[in-house]
Length: 159
Figure 1 (cartoon, rainbow, N blue to C red):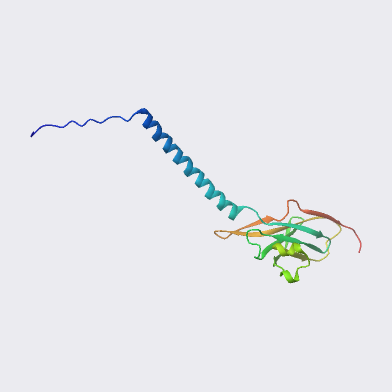
Figure 2 (cartoon, rainbow, N blue to C red):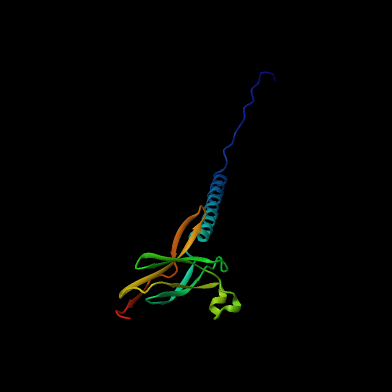
């Protein structure tokens, strides 16, 4: 059989087989997209979600007090910045209060107390907001308000 040619017969796959392969490829792509969304969601939550929470418990003409907590790192100090009437005024670090020195159970759950003291504000209505200074990978700094709204109060003239 020298010089004879062999014709190969290539059969097309059955339509059901093609449909199953297409469904399998689409399902695989969908699963890859879901996994990618999950990974990006976790990374976004960890690095960009403002999980830091807090409360301004007192604001007056000479001080602002409250607490702050970071559930992702409850025992780490939290750097804070105070803004009075929209202007940055002071920076401090809220350190964890050791449980044996905590005045209440509130402080034993990773919530750090803070107090900003400053010169007496002039008479009038003022707003204060406390921001947590957060660092993300790449050393980008962002200010995250610890409360949803700023605290507003009025200083009376005189004394």
